[in-house]
Image (cartoon, rainbow, N blue to C red; front, side, top):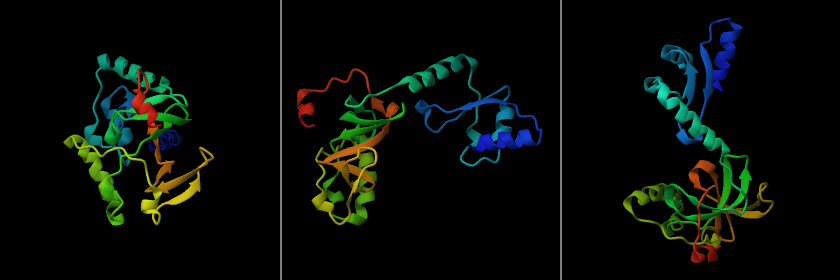
Length: 208
């Protein structure tokens, strides 16, 4: 958006705008790609724009451009369907089975999961957020929090019940996360999900 505003400013002042296109790919979070003839043109347009690190700007070799565009194109074509089984790629839910309950466009999906919440998250409310962050590190230490259905009675003073505009059903909301019948309903980008060749075992399906 900031680049677009700068482009409009250049046009209004009749200044030469040497950028041909700008795009972002979900496969490469944190990066934007700017098409131009020279690196100096790119650096000129991003100067003064917050959130872009000018020092890390570099040219992409021509031989790598085709693969980059192909990868981004494949990501935009990835689709999921409601009631489709998926697995989570990263984080504390890595490799966990999930059931798609709703889809937002072609890039996001609401997935039903069995929560992995540490028991100590319910004991000290002041430490809850810290515990969730700590769990993100436990994966690399080969320590996993066990799966366990959410029990709202353990945090009845910290959670609230409200109707979801997406599902048209009532959910418990705790730490800005949605729970229903003990299950976690979490929004994921589609590229964070394994959507093909997901073959759940009977024991996994029975938990849903």
